[in-house]
Image (tube, rainbow, N blue to C red; front, side, top):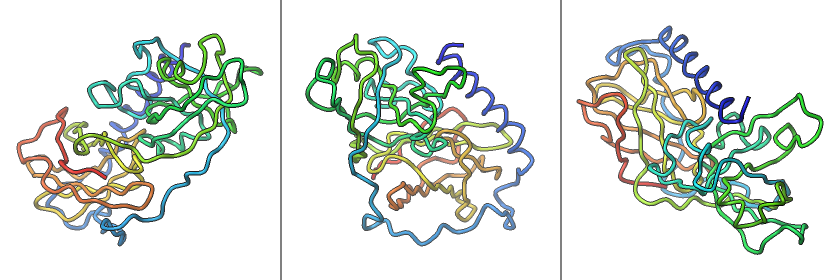
Length: 277
């Protein structure tokens, strides 16, 4: 089975699980005694919280897809058209050791080829984590994405900026960097009448989200659960209410996005949070 087929299959299973599991916990936005409505921990959004690790580490890199980004769209982080969402070709699929069950989705990395003068090119690239490189336990060689390997499966366009095509796989050094995004954080509404699922994207700063809440105009803050990739869900029915979001990134910064979604929202729509990290 090809990598793209595996990712589509995994994504399909995750969506089916959400449709079966989340409705069990469904409740309505006007009900006060909902376990999910715990207040967020006290985290300041006015000053930068604990910073993420910016040290350089060793890894390896390969590429997948074609020069135009074929097979790199969508994937295990839940993003869709990466060009429309602002990520373009500057993306990578991460191995299990880096993917962190999807919590690293949206994080940005600087990568440079190293210790291989035959194949390395000078300079570095900056990419956003948008996909998962699944392990293959049937192989005994070229097991780049198997634990505990730290590996970046880059888009071809990004790979060619740091290495020659014929190299196939090269040693690299990488570090976390701040994500520089244009415009506000975007919030895409998904799900159905049984549950609400939100995909936040175009997230600046640390880029990866560790905690998220939603608030209807008739409710308090409702803690959302990470479903898969960067999809966050709640079983509280919030249709017909204006929605605000509270987002905490991995470096401890929390921002409130007030009245992002109007009362007449529907599923499959995208709304601009107007501010960013």
